[in-house]
Image (cartoon, rainbow, N blue to C red; front, top):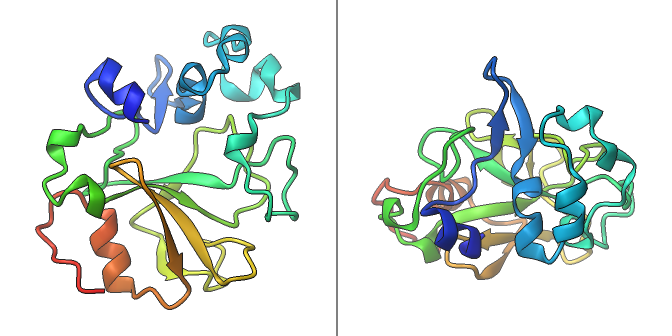
Length: 188
């Protein structure tokens, strides 16, 4: 993510769009060259929508699947998502830069782990902040979560660090960590 930012002046968009403005390709595809997956990126046909792409039959890079998520297809189902929407780093087809994150990159979530099953890694669909349940592993199916025995989930911060958030993380803290410029103070 940070290497992409260095090259483009912002984080990747959550998705690219087609001529009609419909989501076409996921940020996960845009990051392939930065993950050492140049050949996979070259095989991906960006003229086709994600669900008509030949890479649908290819295994996804291991970095997009948590090994503890045994309920998802490790060949194609991702465990990692962006949280999109107003106030976050990702606004769909646009995204913020490090300079936009006035709450501090170390205080802002970029990627979350979620126990959503059946979401193909190529699919340009992530978690919408406006409908997100601000809890960890609440069981609603629309929250940050995982299948880790320790009871919590990993999040990637905008400064590149990974943090563990346990199931007791408050909704207020989660909300603060998801915003880029609300001027929140972190109390936990």
